[in-house]
Length: 193
Image 1 (tube, rainbow, N blue to C red):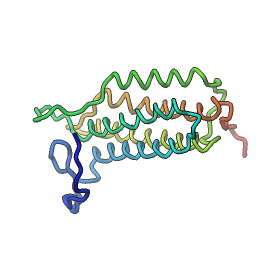
Image 2 (image 1 turned 135 degrees about the horizontal axis):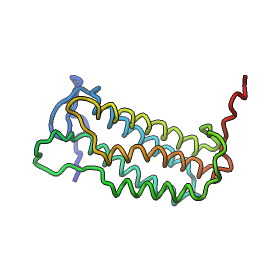
Image 3 (image 1 turned 30 degrees about the vertical axis):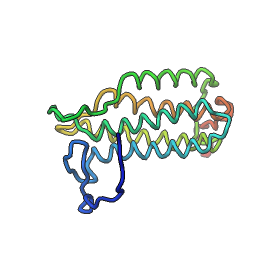
Image 4 (image 1 turned 60 degrees about the horizontal axis):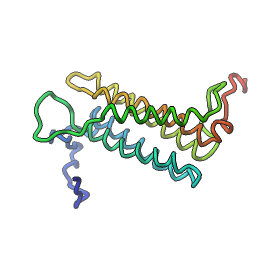
């Protein structure tokens, strides 16, 4: 159980922060950047949820589950797997979470108009906000890939799959709130030449 009774600790005043293992690292370390951007994606999803209105309770419930999953992902990333035993079992992303988000993508996508062009971010406030969340989640994915390529660093396969599926989910969700794709704003190549 998480218990936060003091918000500032002053332990990061010199530019370091603690990982879940107790190890101190620079606040701009690749691992911190990765889970910091996951947190940013979570916040962007929270903003998108505000724009949904009352007509999308099912989607809102899915987004709330995703926000909880993103805390799981942050917990996974803040405890690096160094191949050494820990005094506790770290929280890791699971294949079940990946399977669930894939099923939810398929469920939403089944109701959409087929795409005939790329979609410009917009249409409705909710769709635009979901596109912002999508692009932030793609940045988190890039940072996780960078992290996983560094010597001595790993990212679990389930975590990588989940963050990759998240941007797909957010894209489909943005089309879903745009009247099932009927209100999408489509890219017209070369329109303004």
